Image 1 (cartoon, rainbow, N blue to C red):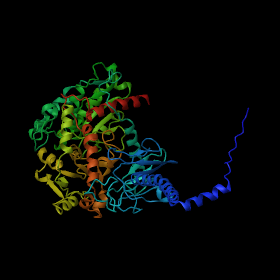
Image 2: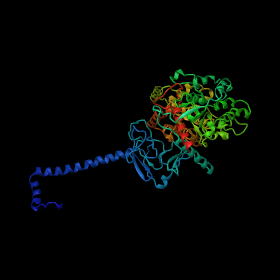
Image 3: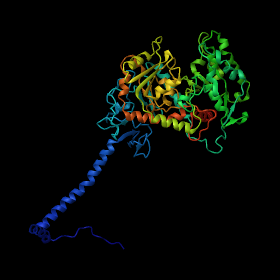
Image 4: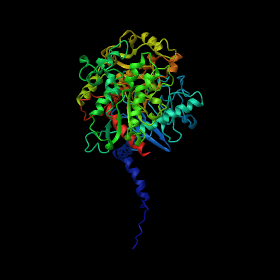
Amino acid sequence: MPVSISKRRPRTSKKTETEKPEASLKDPRTGCNSICSVFSSSILYRVPLTILFLFFIYLWSTSTTVISGNVVHICISSRKLNDLYCLTAGTQPGLHVPVSNFTKPVIRSEEEKSVIVLGESGERNSSNFTVGASPNVIKNETSTGERGSGLDQDSKPINEKSLDSFLVDWDSETGEERYRYINSKDEDEETALKAVDKYLKIQRSWLSTGNNRNKQASCEGKGIYVYDLPSKFNKDLLGECSDMVPWANFCSYFKNDALGESIESLGKGWFRTHQYSLEPIFHSRVLKHPCRVYEENLAKLFYVPFYGGIDVLRWHFKNVSEDIKDVLAIEVVKWLGSKQSWRKNSGKDHVFVLGKISWDFRRKNKFSWGSSLLEMEEMKNPTKLLIERNPWEVNDIAIPHPTFFHPKTDDDISNWQNKIIQKHRRSLISFAGGARPGNPDSIRSTLIDQCRSSPDQCRFLNCTSGGCDKPESVIELFQDSEFCLQPPGDSPTRKSVFDSLVAGCIPVIFDPYTAYYQYTWHLPEDHRTYSVYINKEDLKAKKVNVINELMAMSLREREDMRSYIVHELLPGLVYGDPNGKFERFRDGFDITIDSLLRMISKKIVS
């Protein structure tokens, strides 16, 4: 049966209440005890509040507020973490926020937060917004300009002027963060840039992550068939090495499976590799791939070992007709057309590796250089792996230029990583290159002038006078430098970008087509993790001094970026020795093959 319990406090008699103060007055000790008790209770009551208040102060000073959709995430940074950890989500938010880009908090209206433009002029529309940050990310730092921990005594706050001139906004369809490095001048250019973004996104969806090398049956359904082309399409071309270009004998570059002669002074795994040796290097690796099959009906991927880049190179400096330039390209397409394996999927599951830039295979008139291989209708469907892609061709995929480093084992990679991460770098900045006086669009002369005007901060290696002929000179310079300037040359991309990354030198990029619009499988979408971007238009207009901009970056920022380059990127940027074996790492070849197989699966299904 229910029982009623009264919550009324028992009544205290008035007599008892009036007697208590009298007693305390008569006995001083009793009065003191009462007062001390009240004081102690008050202090003890405030201590937890004080601790809680200090904790919120600490949390605020090391946190970032990330607004993602209708959700507000509180994210904290850690010296041991490369990314933010969000307490509210238990993970990282949808948009990537590098730990290294903290700045003072700014409160903005919804209109101001909708988009922030850091345009070609280099001036920010909102002067105190975080460089490169998402418009919906509010960040903070300590008053010293150092990031929370205060461990970097040599660090300096970022200049009020931006190091990066680019736009950060969102894809209107997906809501994802995206980077825009070029402000379109008209509707046609805007359409072209949207196409670039679209194809980059598609290619990134094909990227294969993870290391499945040690799993049983990892080749099941992933057979790679290598066509046995007539030798005139590959090996015979290498035989013309002595007469390939007028001023050099290429034969030494094709030794050691086209890695070139070894460089003893740089250590194990270093070779004098030519920048156009990608085709025979890749061929050697595919022939020894564990998933290679010898029957066409077992293949998922068909590799066509046509050395198209070597074919273009041998005619580049000779006065021959377009018919001669195209003869092998026409013949290889005709040869493939006779194969059922090609006709089955119209070449969609076929891949060519072409060791030059895409434009060298897109000749449209009889008086230009190169071949018209990629202008042929039959070549629309196959995948083309190139050192520089056409950004408006989704089946053009850029993969790294061959560097001088070709490790054979996991230990070769680990030893090199340990060496360069500990390397003392005596120069802040270096530039290895030559001027382009005949090219009015080139920024190289400006960079050379700025570099030479600050000899204490910048070292210049003049490649026009033969200073870059020896790989040792270039690699030693990059090992000794914090930043390596990478302006466009004869085309937007540069082999030097990958040489600098392998040496642990942070590349400074001036044109998004140099790297950001190129290597979707080997470089991350967030360029801030491994490079510094300075818009070339600002340099042309003399609105920026590169030396001063780079001097403003803190030691901690440089160390974080270098650590990411060396430990996360480096293994995937090199092509290992064809006779080597890796268990812990995936090199550039492994990433490419794994992603090709993933891509073919999607293309054939679609």
